[in-house]
Image (cartoon, rainbow, N blue to C red; front, top):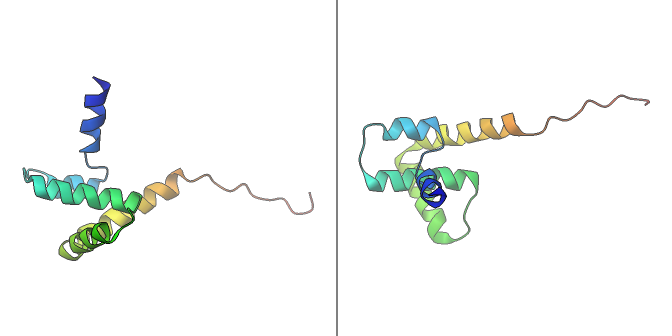
Length: 90
């Protein structure tokens, strides 16, 4: 059962930008491309084929790609450990 839940989570959009873009659409190719874009922004995959695919998705959807990038960057900043202020002379 947990494997089924894990697999369904892999097919779920992580960002509100992609969720909004996919709202009401049943296009499997669009879902696949936009999920690939999200995962790429989180952890780029090495290789020319992956780089070409993400480049084509970004070129076709520049506003959406920028929104995904910004949302992931904001989430990373929000979860990053905060530096403790240093007290000089201590």
